[in-house]
Image 1 (cartoon, rainbow, N blue to C red):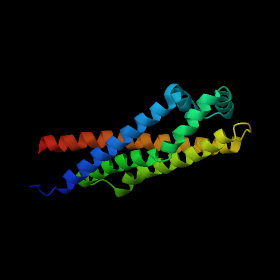
Image 2: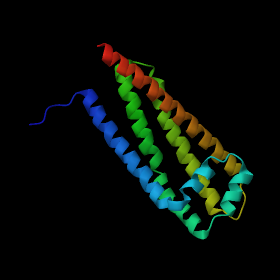
Image 3: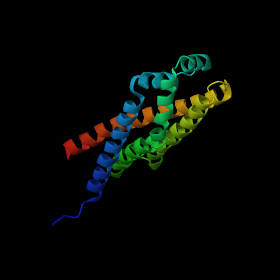
Image 4: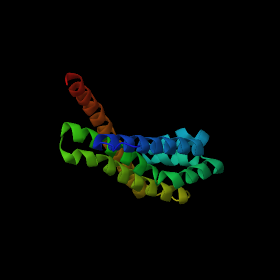
Length: 170
């Protein structure tokens, strides 16, 4: 009744499942944040403590509540996108045979995002006290996360082109 799936077909199904979970997680976080979605983006992309604390100081109680609520899912979210990116890179590695260490970059991004979340949560919970050292830790993890995600996306673009070229030639 069911045919046995080939290795690449199985990984394809896992990629689809992981990507759907990642997108659902991202949409749910956007829904939780509502009008504060762009505020979170500003906070995560601010690498200057004065700007960060200025944004944080101007938030309403309701906005702070939404930011805190989003962390329930945002602690799992990095592992959702990390798994999706890892599976995509693993698929291309199976077909293109590039060095294995590149496929672990999504997990570096995931762990950096996880630790960034911990630092940001601490800062928000301690909103009345300025913690520049924790801010710099969060910024460092944020920078590492964005750089590794960008490298992963560039790799996926490059490997997609190579994969399609080899499929067209064969």
